[in-house]
Length: 422
Image (cartoon, rainbow, N blue to C red; front, top):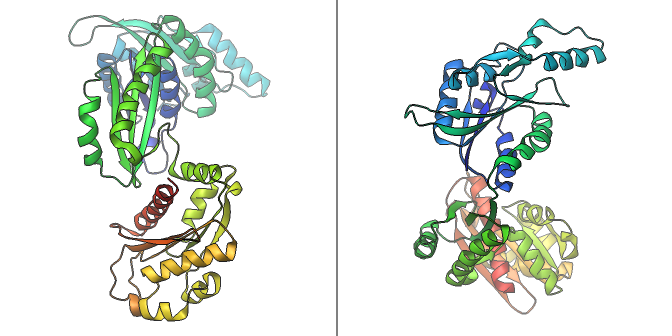
């Protein structure tokens, strides 16, 4: 069963509002074994919305619409669904009574335009909305479309406000879907890899996953990592899980230590887990990343069990004071250098008493460095790691703007730490 979600509202076609309802609806539909094949955002335009509904009906078994059920002239969902399906609308007496009671309970007169919210598609079931004035609608119907071949379609109309949509879907729509849908279950897995090109991952993994035509495989790249998503639908949950696990295990054999997470955990979660398993503590000294590494680590609950803390020695005198970096190193090599990264890592580890010290120093841009760093390129970053016995320094050249350089620098630091712990 394939579904399409249509989010309605011109505000979501501006930079100021986002469609978050579709994420919630996708999770709910997936839990019922339904794949969401399409998502569409349409403004408050009758022609555009009617066309979008017609397209959705031609390619999806289930069409879920969110928004456009209010009382104003630009709330067009009811009329456009009726037009696309060739159905009539009628005023529902029970909905009218519920609306009148709602306004009476607030000691308010019901405005005339609220009567529009009593219009129900012929053949539809009203979904009671206890959190707002706009009821939802459930329609189990057939649709011929341009080809003339008739197919069964489930059309669900839900209000736009999340506080109304979520309970209405969970309490009214989902139970009905559960009754009429075939008994299928969906399982999913996610493998994550850091700092490896997407093309390389696909070249090595495609020959493995391509024969698994019943498992939907997606490769996502961004923020210094690659994610492999596997999803499979089967008559039982056990069968679905066995299938995705089988494929995931084959990919794990191929990619080996490049995979840092087999069940979707973040890189910082894995690093903290590994430190905890070894009874080790971590401290960090960040210059160009300005505390971003510490922020990523402390965003994980209970990070304090292994993360002692960090400093941001941005200026050179702070590197001397907070990390005991020798002044002559700064004068000779500059702040953005391997010797300074080494001294920062060793200094923060010794001062904090942690098992491991990690340092980051670099040029994030857009302006260049000064003194010994004047001729060094933007994006040059040095990462130091000291465990008390050995200190290693990794040099990387990160392309992109300031935000990208800073984020990728923390990714390199976490991956260096993970590889070292392994």
